[in-house]
Structure formats: structure tokens, C-alpha cells
Length: 345
Image (cartoon, rainbow, N blue to C red):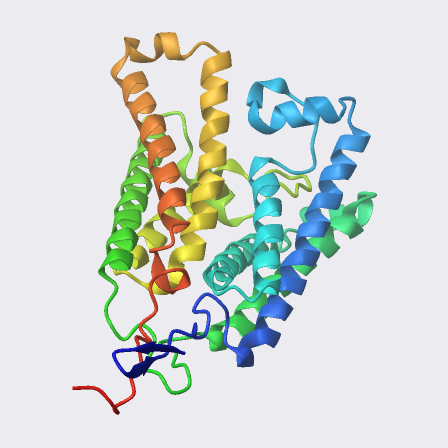
């Protein structure tokens, strides 16, 4: 308490708006356990891929950022590598009861569910299904797929009921009773950046499908059917990752444009993944000397512009999403001051 003009002003901090409510602790801990176990599983596959290959750890580390380094045949690809880190970080945030982990975990579960459904369609193929029995690692691969499905179902089951609206500290006014224009502005900026990136990627995908030389039916089947390649592969196909990224950018962009407070974590982790993949693209363009030849054609120039925009946009989203003024995770609380009636004019 502090005396001011004969009255008392309560300056004690209220409840941390960035932490989950006490009644949701079990949901966040269950989420941390699920994502942590799955991150450990992917890490084990990554280590196995390094150990069985001809290249060493140094080559693998170079291959993380340089697609042309060719660190030998790997079990997982760059998407899986990036999401291994995402799952581990989100699990740590959930264990710390941070509300930002909720939307990030729900996004992770949605993507895992999409991967599981795609694999389920593939298992309808008899020859593909038989490979799980004949391949020495088929049982472990199937167990990994099953674990992913369990995580994809458990996380939303425990987190969807754990939504938190305006919170009220005992004896104070409701937290976030006053609209946060700074939060809304940051959210809408992120939404616009995501939507533009999604539309650009959608345009390039449409161009690739209509330019000739691409079997559209085969491409679309690769999006939903895990048996298309005919081999067991824990890394996602190009068709699936392309369509999934477009849909995620458009859906998250729309939600952020509406200034939904609960998408900050999802924006942050997906922008980080996209930023990592864009950096890999820039490294590849550099080592292949494509920069010097990019503006010789209109298509090359547009490709460079898209890459540059992706690099700038995803960096901006990461910066905005980690800002203290974004959402109910670091902004100013609205408890205000409580002043005693006695001695006040």
C-alpha cells in the first residue's frame, strides 16, 4: 500500500495475464507431456538418421541451412526438423503454464492430425500397408504415426475447454476491460502479412499446376494419400507441405486480421518455421549463384520478390508476436488503482 493525498493506493500486482488459470494447469501439463514425448521421438529419428548415414554431425548441421550440402539420406526432412524444435518449445511453454502455448499447441495438433489422416488414407493401400510388416523399421514408423495421432487428439481435447476470456482478480475490475488498440493493431498487421504470403504461395502453386508438365490429379493425390510414393517415409511430401502451408497462412491470417487474441502463439511458431525454411531457400539461391541470374526473366524476378517478401514478412511477424504489447500476455493490466473513500474529495 502507498499513501497518496490522504488515501491509499493499491499498487500490488494482480494475476499474471500471461499465465493459465489455476483450473487449467492439468490441461497444460498434459499438453506439455504429449508434445514433449513426440518431440523426443522425432529427435530420436533425427539422431538415428545421422548415425546410419555416411556423413557426420558437421555435415548434418550444414545441411540444416544449406539444402545443397546433401548430408546423406535422412529419415526426416526440414519441416520435421523445424517442428521438432516447435514441439519442444511449446511443451516447455505449456509446462510453464504460459497461455501463449495454447494456440501454438492447437496448431501443432491440427497439423499432426492432417499428417495422420493422410497416412490413414495411405494405409488403405494393401502393398503400402504390407511394407510396415516387411520393413525392419516399419513397426517403429507405425508406432510414431500412432503416437502422432494420439497427440493430435489429446491436445485439443484438453486445451479447447481451457479457453480463457477476460480474467478478474479478486477485488478488482475485470482484466482487459478496456480494448487494447495496440494489440489489435499488431494482430491485424500480422494477419495482413500472413494473408499476402498465403495468396502469393497460392498463386505460385496454381502457376506450377497450370504451366504444363504437372499431373494435377497426381499432385492432389499426393496431398491426401501417404502411399503415393510407394515407400515408407516419415518426412512429408512436397505436395502436402505446400498445400498445408498455404491453408495455414490463410486461416491464421484471417483469424489474426479479426484481432483474435488467442492466435499469438500459433502466429509465432508458424512464422518461425516459415522463416527458417525461407532462410534455407536464400542460402540455396546464394550457393547456386541464382541471385546473379534471377532478374534475367520476369518469372525469376517475381520469385526473388516473393522470397524477399517472405523473409521480411515472417521476420516482422516473429518480432510483433513476441512484443509485450501483443495480446493479454504482456500488455498493461486494467486493475487500476483502488483508492479509499475516506479523505478523498
